[in-house]
Length: 227
Image (cartoon, rainbow, N blue to C red; front, side):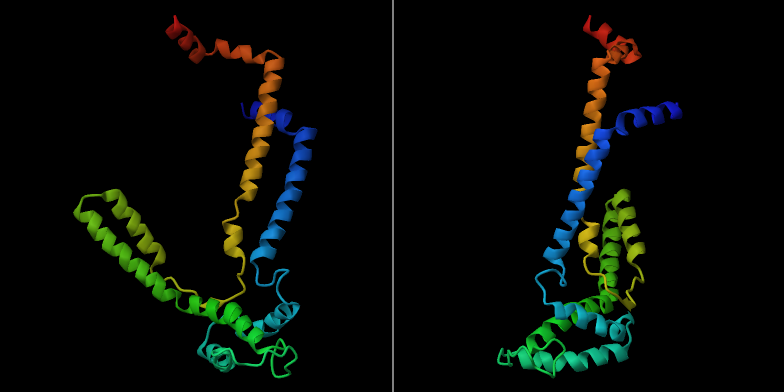
């Protein structure tokens, strides 16, 4: 039976037209992924080239396990920039030798978006996880009081998953969320499957193999009901 299924899959889906469609869809998918990156990445096509080089120059200083020393060093650089740009009166010169990127505002937003905010989120994630656990435990008690065992177990699982959860390290994870939620490729797979299945039904119809369906038990029962 397994060999028969493999044979049918090979016969109906390893066709030249299917392979060509797969290659075309793969190219479309790659173009779409590049487009998503350019539209959403801080290092996309619209961002200054200096940002990427500066980011990776500083990456070794702040990546890895988050320590008080690393956080202090980051704040030592970031706080003065935050103060300078707070009232929007800082110099807009693009060739400032005392900056990383040549501009005070550019330095500020680079550190804020690429280091301070993601590092703060990772460092404070323990508090976020504890809040989720507390809410789940309250829900467990609530659903237990009303005898809803399914939702009680669901919240028990949530509490177990988030208990003691921390993010001790800082790493470059930009775009991961976009790619995890990326579903355009699923649409292409569905279209490819539909295209392949259409060919199956057409070939079965042309060869009159569909008439064999009339010999099945279900078809016989249906004919009896119709009578």
